[in-house]
Image 1: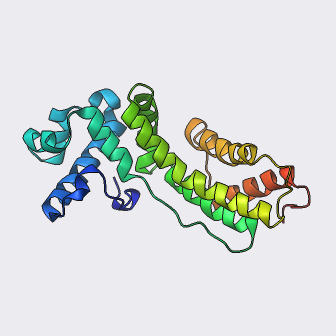
Image 2: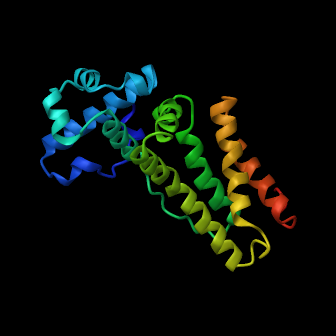
Image 3: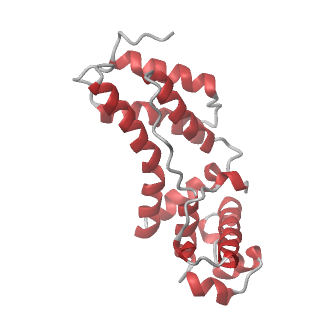
Length: 207
């Protein structure tokens, strides 16, 4: 698991200012992610996480009451709140944001490796669902803010359904990355954004 995959947003234990606690959290988050990627949700047990992280089980139970709480903590570690770009160019701003999502979903990224297990766990565990929704919503909210601003500036037709635009932008990215396991490099993102905008507002023709 790469350090840059993990956001700096503190999770449940970060309220403690003791650096030793934060270092423990980091080791635990990395351990949970490795187990999820290698074994799936059933492979995340308190015993395995303790062994993988090199901490005592009593330390885990001090901050987390079970495997579901550990997975929720790991999901929190991936919450990354992006800045909302405002270059004045709608297409460029969307490419920047969607490109960040594409990087998270690259096959070698930790988030892409654990996401199928997180989705499965979120179906049955409300707290994991809440954290996963928060993780997903940060970039979606940023995309919506860019689209809202574009509507106010008449860069998008006022009749355009922004929920549909968001689905058209995000859905193919996840399908291409996670289902078909195809490349979503910068060039693909640029072409994809241009095609979606042209479909909604023909005046926004691809360059």
